[in-house]
Image 1 (cartoon, rainbow, N blue to C red):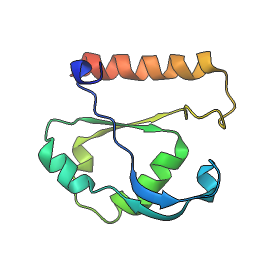
Image 2: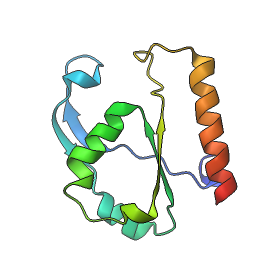
Image 3: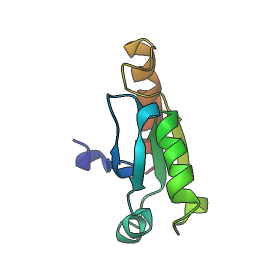
Image 4: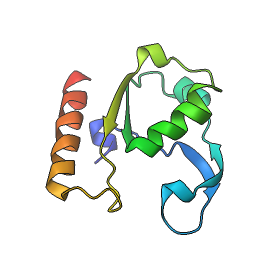
Length: 107
């Protein structure tokens, strides 16, 4: 389904260590190589972050250290799908639907 809608799904972090499931406990993060990813997928026009921590790690370990065309990329900040982000599922889903609809419609 993702491929049919031209959506790629990729974690900001390639690896990390943590005890438990909270992002606040992440240690020794290593980012994925986004420069190579963008070079291999030049038609990407939008990045959607699943929560604030994904964006935080992207800014810290990718944006400041890797070369990629950020000025050509639309950035979306979406609510975390994690149950730790205590918002009603319907509220989160509505925001994701709206963002994805506008992205898919823009491609």
